[in-house]
Every structure is written in C-alpha cells, then in structure tokens.
Figure 1: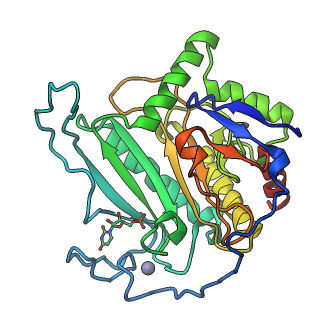
Figure 2: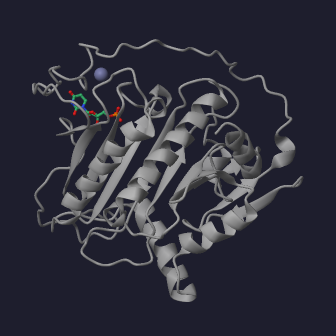
Length: 334
Ligand code: H2U
Ligand code: ZN
C-alpha cells in the first residue's frame, strides 16, 4: 500500500489511520542509545525478591518457582457495598475486587524473554489456577491478568512479575470487545477470533510465529507499531479450558514473541501485555475467545517511542509503518 487508508479494529469497533507514505519523513526527535543494564540474580533492595521485606511490612518467603501475593497497595478492595447515585450527571457506583502480584521466578535478572518455554509454563499454570479460583467467586465478574514491562511502561521494578486485578464489573475494554464478539457470533455462528485467525493463516502476511496450538500475529488494525495478538488455534473462552499441551504451546509462543521483540532493537523490549477472557459472572459467553494483547511503545530504536498524543487523543490512532512491515520484521527475528 502507498496511500493512506483507515482500517477497522474488529474487536473494538475503532478505526485506525495507516499512512505508509510518511515513514520516510525527517526525524529530529530523541536519538537512540542502547543501555544494557547488568542485573543480579538476587537484589536485597528488590521488594519482589525472595526473603525481602516488602513495603507493607510483610516478608516474602524463600520462594522457588512462581510466587503470588496480595498487592500491598491494591486499587480494588473486597466486599461489595450498596450505593451509587441516581444523579444522571454525576454517575457513580461502588466497585469491589482485589489485586495480586505474581512473581514469575525468584531470579531477579530474568525477563520473560530470558526464560525458557519450560520456565514460562509454570507461569501459565499459575495464571490458569488464579483465573479458575477467581472465576468461581460470586463477587468477581472479571479477571484481568497483565504485565507492565520496563520503565517506559511504568513498571515499578525490573523483577519479572505481572499483576492480576479481579473485580465485580466487566471493565471497559472487555465490554467493548465482548459486544463485538457477541455480534459476530450471532451473525456467523462461530467466534470472531476463530474466523479472523483462519483469514490471517491463509493470508500469512501478518503472522509472526506459530506452533500447533497458538499463533502470534500483528493484527490488521494494529495501532502500536509492533503490537501483537496471541490467539489459540482452538477457540476457548478462558485459560481454564486449555489442555496441558495448549498451556505448553502458549508458553512457547510467549517465549518466541518476547525474544523476537528483544532482538528488534537489541534492548529488553518494553510492553504492556495482558489476557482477555470471558467474564466470570457464571455465564457461558461462547462468543469470547481467550487472547493476549501486546502493546509495545517502541517505534524505531531502543529509545524512540511512539506517543499516542495530539491527533490520536483527539481523533483516532495513526501509524506510518504498516502492520505487514512490522510483522515481517518480527517474523525474521523469530
Ligand atoms: P508494577 O511494576 O506493574 O507497578 O507492579 C508492581 C506492583 O507491586 C504494584 O502494583 C505492588 C505495587 O502496588 N507492590 C506491593 O504490593 N508491595 C510492595 O512492597 C511494593 C510494590
Ligand atoms: Zn527482585
């Protein structure tokens, strides 16, 4: 493609503007400088390392493998309460829930990209166990499992870790994606992401990597330069429906994708990643397909990032590099 076009994000209903002719424009912004910090295996000043006293006054156990604890500074608190307002101009409701932190490994020096598929597998097992446990609770309607990686994305600590926020109401992004998936399922009799994956596998131009159970691709409607979508080949509504072979397949794809990211600009690649699964209100939600989004901010080097500002905040997301070019670059690095 050589002229601007807009593409529809099937999951959200948002349009994204793709302007490939702009890639060659002059750039006088921040220059790249690749800093590769050496990190120790155990940092006594890290509140996620084994045996260290956390800010809340609790000491971490000498854990081995994956370790989950209740966030000492939770954004959500358990205990549903009555209330809210009848005021149509100032609308509010109480929101109940809980927040947990999940340390992927006691090894402070690692990242997901530095972990083998076999080391990521227990993380997938823990995500699954957490989702299953929280989904069974009457007070939890949605579970969001995610990771902020790197200072650029606001991660407070380099120790390999992610978070789980579980809450009463389904949050915005999941409501939007749920509505679009429900409409597609009603009209076509199969899930939106099953139809979409078949189309992408046939086209093959936006695939990053794939194995027998999972596929990573740059979505046709990607807004971030190297955004990725991780999809199961078999449409399941949540991690609790994955077989052990599929969980191992997911670990393998996460390993390959994060390694490709690190190779792209020879830097530990920052991103926000997370999973979307069915709401945990007890309903079946057969239209929902489990998937992961990766939203990395970097554009052309270790320090030159994309900002979603100006036109993006006031109008719609816009990109210069095409999703097809981004996928080809990542594919070459897997
Ligand atoms: P991020 O790096 O994505 O910010 O996650 C770290 C989380 O760890 C953050 O939510 C929590 C913060 O509230 N935390 C604790 O629970 N205990 C501590 O001692 C420090 C940080
Ligand atoms: Zn640590």
